[in-house]
Image (cartoon, rainbow, N blue to C red; front, top):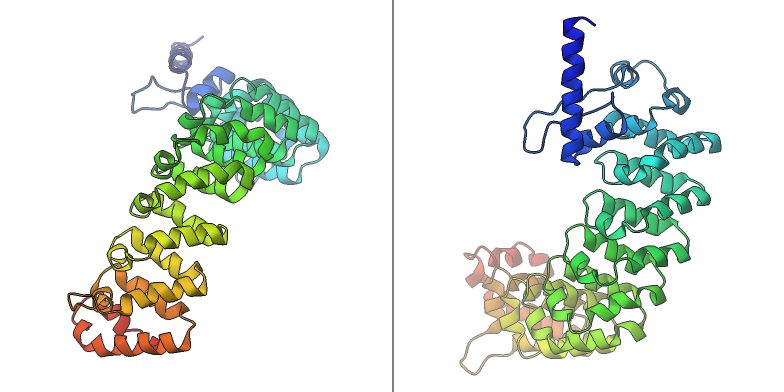
Amino acid sequence: MPPSSAAAAAAAAAVAAAAAASGSGTSALRSRLHDNSGASSPAGSDVVHIIRSPLLEEFRSNKNKKYELKDIVDHVVEFSGDQHGSRFIQQKLETASSDEKQLVFDEILPNCLQLMTDVFGNYVIQKLFEHGNQTQKTILAKHMEGHILSLSLQMYGCRVVQKALEHVLIDQQATMISELDSSVLKCVKDQNGNHVVQKAIERVPSQHIQFIIDTFHGQVYHLATHPYGCRVIQRMFEHCPDEQTGRLLEELHRCTSQLVQDQYGNYVVQHILEHGKEQDKAMIIAKIRGHVLQLSKHKFASNVVEKCVAYGRKEDRHALIEEVLLTRPDGSYPLLTLMKDQYANYVLQKMLDVVDDGEQRDLLVSRIRMHLHSVRKYTYGKHLTQSESHV
């Protein structure tokens, strides 16, 4: 072997060994799967060396040649871990024949777990869940068993778990999601795992996710005020039956006053106002009444007041609007404060949009007109003066 070739081979072997040792990263994955298809420098290095097979190199460089799945036999895994190769396989799987899908499936299966956490490979696995036959989906999901938690907490793996939950049969859904038992809160508060819990609540029959609901008892305030937890709580109220959510709604009602002023909790309260039962909406609005001015001036609570006005019963809406029309004991006008405030002016605009009592509307409009001259100089008062068509 010429010296240059020997040196190149030695360099490739060293890079592959480093990648295998690091055990992470797209290129490291390719190194483990194909001795000649990819490698990565050790973790922390800025330099990434990728060694591709001649077939992949030709595919990437020759844009004119029309490739089919049969042309990449024995290179499906390598292509799956490559940005362009992965996109090619994804597109082909959408219209592939049964034999072509089986070809891809057979090559993917021994390395499916690694591909599930690969930046490009995960999309190929997802396409197999979308377009493969039910047997292939079942086998793929079977290979995931024992790894659902780790996959759920991984950036790309969590997408594969979600896709699997959409396409496997109910028994397998139940088996997969049961692996999160004892780790529900960890997943809910994780930037990746929370999406898996949301998907489980949306797609898995309620009887199979009772353990998730049980975990939420005593945790509603804590979760509703968490950036990821608030999303999960909303999905639960949206998809789970009353017998599962009843106690949790009671918990929520006990802390409504705190939640409406929280940067995340306010979204949960808004969700109930939009999608909840009339009795639950009424309970929330009851906590808002008497505090409309104060809460309308609050960055987060003002959004809740808007929803109360938009989704409350006619009598509730009437009471909320009446509250801002009254002159306070100290002689101040809540309406004027709303008109000037950066957040409250939006509440007032919403009141104008939805007021359906002719007499009250006339009163609201006339009071606003009385003060328009004094709010023109305020940045936020201009919002009202610029939409004088309302008044």
